[in-house]
Image (tube, rainbow, N blue to C red):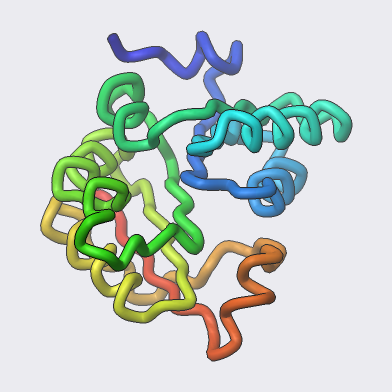
Length: 180
């Protein structure tokens, strides 16, 4: 059963989803900078999701909601069609070992669910310290029908603790959009 965003936020503002917000630096900064938009974070660890939600409450950010769970399942089963203005996927776990394949985020099914849930013109912002991972996510999203946005620049966001520690050779960014 798809859950309408109005039931989650109590309004009809555009929704942006961050997958894997980690400690919440990005989602909290985006929400503070754009009070006219709603931000929904999907964090694999329920405790981390609760901590970010508490931080949003302390900052009086009424436009932030968090859930703990598997983003692949949540997006596929709960997010309505053509309802997300943007996805933010920053520094996802690469899970390079073959035995960890089942943990990888960007499967063909997940890419299709992301494409299905984007509004026409909606964007997926992807950044990683690993160029091969960024390229792989780009390829999978393109195979799901999204098109590269050749002039897109990364949305302004604070660098995360992870990014400061590991992206010593730079951050690789790509953006794809759902055709109008």
